[in-house]
Length: 160
Image (cartoon, rainbow, N blue to C red; front, side):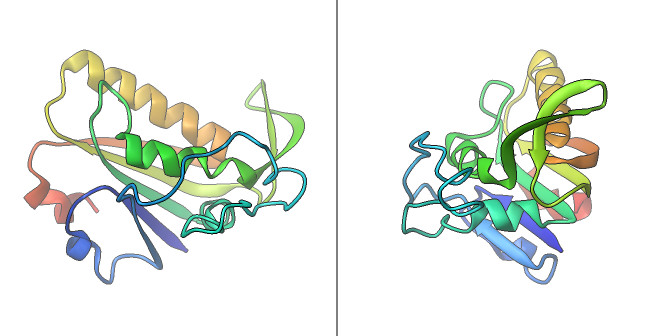
């Protein structure tokens, strides 16, 4: 299953390119940090909005594509909010993965995390973003992380 999370005003460019399209429009509550999605209602957020099932959706994605505006070498706030609300894709228990301690994955390993960042970006921000994508891939259980800088959002279709 291919999941695309994006913060573009018009997601029409993604039509037919994914199984699940999540529009990061900011019309949902931020993570409350209650960890209920870990313990009380595993992989399900207690908040009754569009992101209630986001841990399951992200956790079962074979390929996760994140298209975001660069915000100082990181995701836009709306996209970061979705990532924060996805914490329930893992459990509170720990294990070693890649010689490092990480939370145990609820849904196992996945193929690829693909991050595309658009907007003005310095070389240092690009380097930071690439490292962030790599670390998120490990935490989310993706075998591979790919980061691409997109200087023109009209060319997004070529990068997908």
